[in-house]
Image (cartoon, rainbow, N blue to C red):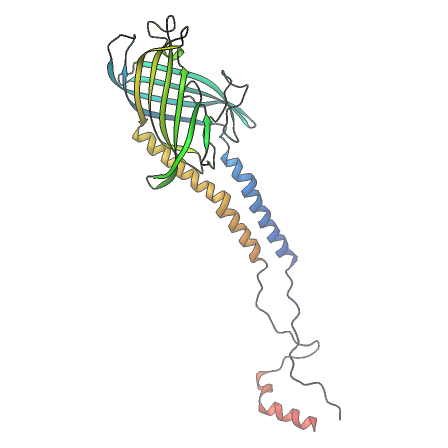
Length: 321
């Protein structure tokens, strides 16, 4: 007597295939992750088209008007103001002014300049501005432990900043740089003095420390010491000191810079790391296997639980005999 194949083997389920909609969703999420990391993030890191910034410095100074004049000790306030005049594409034209004044408001020294700035890497652009400058205008994002040449409105010439160590300011991780400025011609800034520029030039040397948040390149704290001196151009001789000072960020400027750097750091980490990673993981989840279902043979009816008991086994035995 012929019997059916009832060996109890279960049919293999058909392989689970990801619907076309799932493929599209995964690819869309991965594309969005790439756009966020390699286009949106760099756009946020560019110098804003409406960039404007003001920083203030508390200073102590000794000054005199002639090489043999009497020294006067004066507390000063310095103010740097940057203001974008026009921005086109990746180029910004920025006016930078610096004013040193007494607490009563008497201006002792001031400079003003026009800077051409590359909005992508924050470097001075050759051929722009009232002076042909080089180096950084502002420190770049993703700062390296290296040596940077930079030229900003605080001085009339370039400075060199050299990495020294890692540190923290108010709990924020920073890189500490030491900077130097040597033999800068600041005659124009001291032209209010009796013998400048008719008899002497005025030159400046300075040293200082920068605390910079490395992801954003924002200076969160600053201090310096410097000396300006009468200089005889014909003999290349340093005649006498005329202005000796030390200064640092005011508490208000330091707090504002810390706030800016903290926000910029979080935005950088979000756009370059957290958000792209989340989008990649969401795309990968589209391929996660679901719960498998046992599929019946074509044309068959799923057996009820009672059919698999002893009585069902007995019936099968009788049929086979």
